[in-house]
Image (tube, rainbow, N blue to C red; front, side):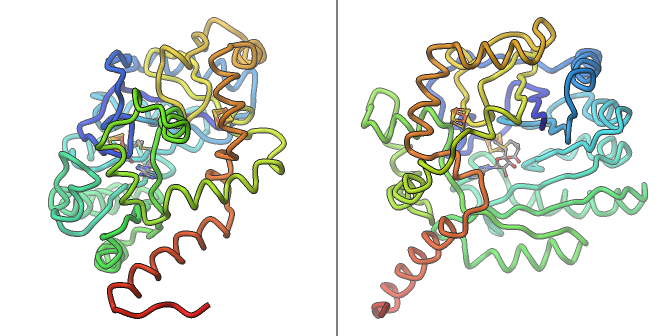
Length: 327
Ligand SMILES: C[S@@+](CC[C@H](N)C(=O)[O-])C[C@H]1O[C@@H](n2cnc3c(N)ncnc32)[C@H](O)[C@@H]1O
Ligand code: SF4
Ligand code: SF4
């Protein structure tokens, strides 16, 4: 079982491809998870399943937690790999984080200059991120932390030419460089787009989708092909996703707590929470639609999905150069 726990209920940025930036629901649970609650959650988790790792994030920004260092130490204390993913716009708690030495820390970006970065990391400042990257590397060395630090570059139309600059900078600090084709979230919004439900999709969402380097419609045409092969959904069965109050969500891809929260993790055995997810009409209807489009394939390593992106990018560059690709 893989655990993703939102230790806070908010983010400092408003990325348009993330529910923190595009959600129409405003009543997401706020606050910060008390360290004692995390400890009780992990005690229960190790008692009833084999946690593979614990991510202290899902839809939110872990560095906003005032006691993030303590939370990492709690996870480490259980002998479990602690994963963080951050936009790294906040310098305040870097010392505590590196002192606690999580197993893995990802820095998510989408550009090397602010003109590019701010299109997809709204409210952020890449110069602050770059300065914080340097501080992080210094603290890693100071504390001799063996944390694997990864620079995660989200690929969009218009930011590919800056990728190499960020790669050079990240690798000069000893970070691992990885890329991913950006996608649009959450799942309920993707389903709303696919069913032309204009009550749940804004013009800004449409503009964001149009900037995807791996185009929306072609991606869905590809996941549709994989739908009959999926069988079960690994995100339903193999992941436990909790909010900062310790409540269990259907999976890591949905956001609306009103529709997709099934119960407090501490109040129910895991097997019962699984049954609650399966029995909940809202959850099961969403899963049926999601599986019907083959959306879980997006979280699997399927080379054909990468080819969809490459083909689109090459066609755009060719058009810019005034040539056409011969197949
Ligand atoms: C929603 S974020 C929350 C954690 C943290 N705030 C961050 O941005 O890294 C969870 C993960 O989603 C990834 N992510 C963000 N925007 C994405 C996008 N448009 N497509 C694919 N993954 C994305 C991030 O890199 C991160 O690892
Ligand atoms: S992707 Fe991360 S940084 Fe961006 S709004 Fe979502 S939680 Fe915040
Ligand atoms: S089928 Fe879709 S909505 Fe249901 S658990 Fe899997 S990823 Fe989530």
